[in-house]
Amino acid sequence: CDLHSFVDRGLGWKESSKQCAPGCEKKGNCNQETGLCECPLGFKGPACEVSVWQACRTSNDEKAIPFYGTALPKSCECWRQLLNTSYDPIARRYHLLSADPLKVAHVPYCYERKGVPPEKQFSDVPRLPDSKVSFYVMTPDAVMMDAMQPVKEIKAFNDQKPLQPLDACPDRCNERGMCEGQSKPGTCRCRKGWEGTACEKNVPSHCMNGCSGRGECQSGFCKCVAGYWGLDCSRSRAYEAEASRVLEVNGTAYSRTRLRIYRYELPWHIAFPTELDDCWWSYDAMYGAFEQFYNQFSGDWAVRTENPGEANLFYVPVLGMYRGGTDAINHHVRKVMHFVRDTYPHLYNRNQGRDHFIFLSGDRGACWLFDEPEIQNPIKLTHFGLQVKMAEYIDMPGWDVQVQGRHNPHYECFKFEKDVVVPCNEIHTGSSEIHDVHKVYEAALAGEDRKYLLYFGGGFRHTRSYSGGARQAYKQHVLSKNDPRVKDGGHIDMYRESVFCFNPYGDGWGNRLPHIILGACIPVTVQDHVHQPFDEVLPYQEFSIQMRVEDVPDMLDVLAAVDKDTIIRMRRAMYQIYRSMYWEGGGMAYNYTLLALKRKLCNLWGRHY
Image (tube, one colour):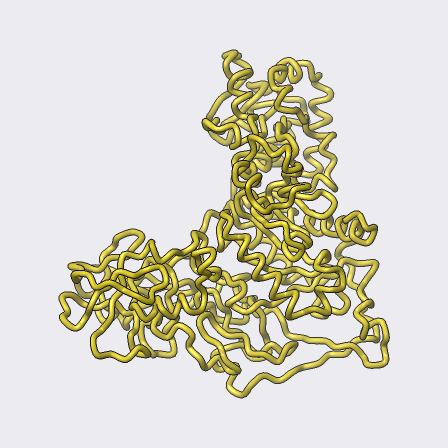
């Protein structure tokens, strides 16, 4: 189907614009769809005039952005404010912020300035020694604190670099960082969105989609030029139904012929691309497929719509990578989906959330999610397609947690009828694999003789659950034979020098398939119960070999029996789809994601889920 054809909005809709409170656009963005002001992190109110975490800022300067991680030593009042707004006493973690859930127990101390009112207990570290500063050990609720001896030196809690007051750094880092060093001038470590000796230069690329070129990146928040709004400043129009149009008013006028996706804009206290810790914001790019999808979708107006009434799918940007691959994602997804359900009931209730989708790029994907309708109903985009009943969940990633938890007993992590496996963001713009791919395939399709029959460059681990036993079986029944046709370990060129490549998963999903296919190496996949990327639209049977763990003892015999004509035919099939395996540099993973989503939408309309 043609996923990139525009569709006429028809006559049933008209543009509308709701006004926000006066002064909104001084600090925030006016969402003309809701009439509410989108506020930067740590602020709320009709015009973002209320500082929620006032004591977590370094001063009352308008440029000051609140700190919320565990790296920077903070005032005790800051921690009280953080806990009052975002701490879950049941989960004993913050729902708001961090890839590694923050716990007060990780923080050695906080400080208070004597005789200073709470609203001025800022988190600019004191210069020591200072008799007017007291230090305290915090309890989990940060209500009762025990006095402790003054510390002799203040260091960042994560990397232990010495810190000093902002006055010791150029221009106080413009209130956008922390001051490192032990003497003047110190060195500014800047917040997300800023760089320079005094954190004076804005870097829009640090924010989602670079703020669409229409805003300033402020620690993850895009301050948009007037007239634009949204997390990446990509929204500029709002719509409402014509009062005389019954289908539009009833919410049943959505497109039945073209994929039309509406993306929610969520407030910062629900989902936000936070720093992973104070002044630390980078993450392993391998997990960044969610961001690649977000950015490419932002400008794809052939599929994206600003009119929720014509949408047939709804994109909920949970930004789960910022909550990590632990069961913390459970609480986060629940919070996000409850917000969507309660705030947009006319959209959510149309199919009880089954026409909504979320992207979970963390380890084990959706395996952590509880068996609750608001969490399970949405379509999941994930890297791990494990579909198995709880009774069969043995020797698989996190099996001890899964069988004891409140997870879906019928398919655990993934349901093929509704969910989509997508490749991870493993291949990047400018890589030699992309640069050389045509040359590699030209030689492969010409029937070149390769050095090795079979290659695997990964480790084996001690636990079977890491790969469902596949790696242990390979080590026992393949490597142990010391066959010279088998290559163990090495570098990326080994994919290009081998006819077949072993493709297991590893504690949640595997990252080798893109490398294998760009190396024109035929994948030998041993992943019991696990669906592969885009296997609802890609003909895996034409370019890969699937084996069960119990088949591994016969692997070498099976592969040696494959004739050369079949090998070339399989390489030719791989060449047709290799761009589906990567997101950057001309990759088409985004396009295939849309194709798979339309397939799932058809399944929804056909009541397959």
